[in-house]
Length: 109
Image (cartoon, rainbow, N blue to C red):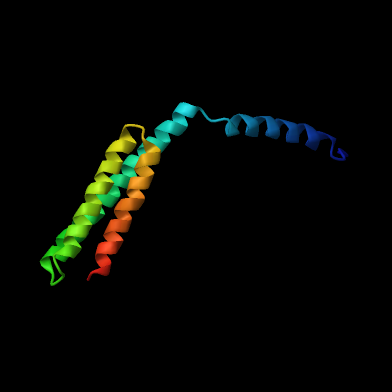
């Protein structure tokens, strides 16, 4: 039972071949995952912005605060739409802009 590493080399070569296959992803799959991610994040941030706008609307906050949340939610909804159409880079930037509008609106409180 003395195999001073000879059998291990063959196993390592097989593992390297398998990892090369796993590293090469289908570009269509990557694009599909990016579309789903952009759409899902946009929808989630839209719902969060609308919920925050409704909560702030019922409280003593100035009218600018719920309007900023609603505007940020609208921008995130646009990002979700663009993300579903494959415009994932624009969707990412719109998501960032929408969250920034919501954060800026929260500063007025």
